[in-house]
Image (tube, rainbow, N blue to C red; front, side):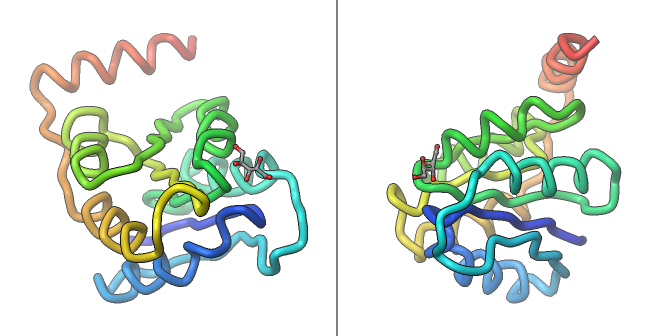
Length: 145
Ligand code: RB5
């Protein structure tokens, strides 16, 4: 599985932990930046990662900003993206099991690198349950038309 990752200056503190989780799982990643703590605009990174996932170039995405909020709002503007802003392990599991989220968003001013490592692993290893949840996810997709 290939994972697209992106962050702004507020989320970069979590990037190493996310990369470690991905590589510990034996997965590949593409890092769309940012690469320093200089101030940047999070929608630019949401767009790069969101377009990569929506195009099928990456299987899933991980986005990081200060809160996880702005970068998830931006990513969710891209057709085909279901970005989940996650702050605990239960949300990391449920966004996959029930919502078939394809992008995980977290905040560098909200959660620790240890949290980010654990949430990323859960997000990347939890399967969508389908069934009644598929009907609901299809209704989300219908809202894009
Ligand atoms: C940048 O200061 C901050 O606004 C951004 O990282 C994010 O928290 C926005 O939602």
